[in-house]
Amino acid sequence: MIRALAILLAALLGFSAALAQTPPAPSTDVRVALDTDAGRILIAVHVDKAPVTAANFLKYVDQKRFDGTLFYRGVGAADYGFVQGGAQNDPKRLLPPIEHEPTTQTGLTHDDGALSMARYAPGSATGDFFIVLGKMPAMDAQPQQASGDNQGFAVFAHVVEGMDVVKAILAAPKSPTAGEGVMKGQMLAAPVTIRTARRAP
Image (cartoon, rainbow, N blue to C red; front, side, top):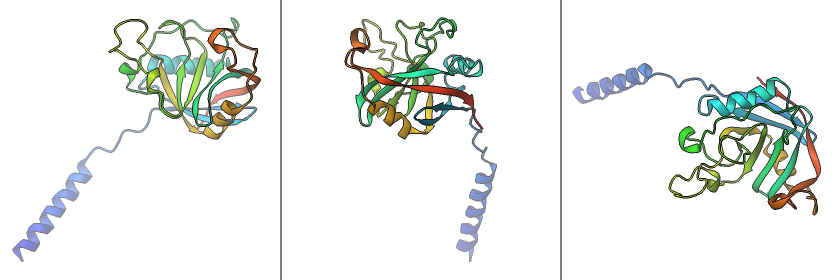
């Protein structure tokens, strides 16, 4: 009898402790729908983890600067690689470059479905981004690399729905002549239009 009461008491105490625990904080992610000629891509923008980069992306969305832009580049094949889109240095669309937020600072990584900013030198990102298929840790910051640019690219969001659309864009035919330097042979023969980019419920 005493043993049964002890077990019951322990269970009740455990239940009370569970009730006292703070519920998980609601997500602060902002959802954005990219409606493209190939279909809809729904993303979650991580405003809490990458505040500078996320705020920049949302400015482009809210000011409709992505409307009519293109997914124009695809690197890789099948389920591994990335697709790139955005303003393509159009001066009418560009906002000023933003401070670089490395993955060592945000805790985000270039895993499947990650969105990250295209850039040249750290701090040069504006209105072009790419979506990763598969895991690409080499794109993360590499602080152990003593020389050269070791800052990686700035992840700021993840695809929630529409990875099939991203895969279709990656698999689309490439032009053998378009593009310069390393981009030659990576440009889509028929770029995919981003019709609209809007915040979504």
